[in-house]
Length: 216
Image (cartoon, rainbow, N blue to C red; front, side, top):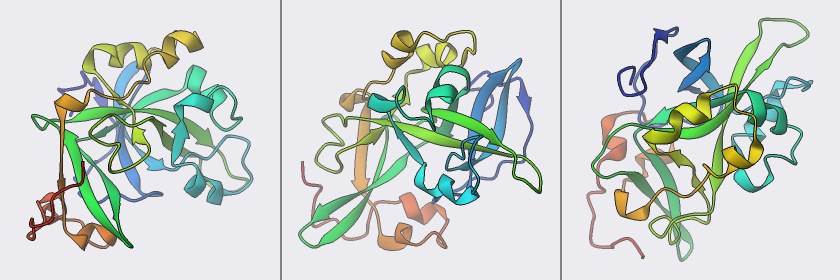
């Protein structure tokens, strides 16, 4: 990841994970002098918050309302980041059930979700750095699975997104587009991912029963 994102400094011990849930740590690239790879808690806690619990409700930020929401608008201008992954899960509704689907780039490689981060200092205790992932309308691949998708930034605009000197909201909002569907792929996975206790490579493997294809 350090090579892929031209990271100059790694400040945390980051372990691989195949089933990350909100409030857990994610790998994040930010630029604050140097380009750093760090661990942040997933679920943004605004600097003005009085309770850590708000973070569990702010795991995502809608691209369309970034400039309107008090929790996000300052971070959007000054504290942008890349949340690093090589895939994500969504659950497709099929009748009364939900089928987990693993979505990734094709060919498979790591990428950066457009993210925002914030520093929160509680009344008592150490400061906490948290983040959120920006979502947008889905592309043609994701639309039959879910009505939103995380914004994946093409490598060519990652530097612009991370640049703290760039504050023009129109320029930044133009970057928050659905990733091209023809450069992505998806497959059904097993119900292992329905429990955060399961965190192994088996989580992303195609489901053993492939008789029921994805609905596109």
